[in-house]
Image (tube, rainbow, N blue to C red; front, side):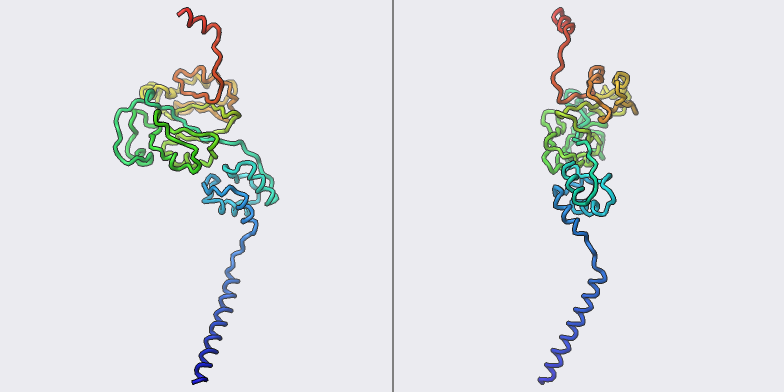
Length: 287
């Protein structure tokens, strides 16, 4: 009886040791080496996991940074240039500074400009409404107002204005992660260069219909008249499919385009009030 127990213990021990040895060699064979710098880079990142860098999360982005030969095409919009400089120091690379950007809503279709022609009674998401029909107004391109962009923002940087029915961006909170841009099925949200004092000039319309049709559906729509294109001294404005577009990199904020737009489709934000010309005051007094 004692021999049987002894043999059993020895056999089980032998099997256990053999299995441990086999498992050790298998683990060594299939061991995946992970560069320790990945942890270091991940720690330097803001841990937002927003996907603004183009990767699933900060860990994946850190892995891509470590494996990349340079950082030219890799950028964390949340951390910005300071974080990228820190990462560059860890990896021994050179970080290319990029201009900060901010989300901009390219639709100004308030109720007084774009009256409703019908009422939608269904699931309140822009994605579903967009796939069902053109919207509650005559404009098939404007904001649907269901707030998909608000739900997508992890930084509380965008809210729906109950009076206008349009989303509004809080520049100081916006990290330019691009989540709202991806969430908008109408593509009315754009990331534009952030200027000093948060000043912006942009065409707040994406309607590519012909002028008469566009203006009928929304009184502040771009009608493709090219007046802004003709007056711009910096070649910052292009015309395509009945729609003007202002290149934020070329624009020098001179505001000449704003003055000539017949429908007020070009917005100027963050500027001091314009000075009224003397002749304008005299004309108003005479009237």
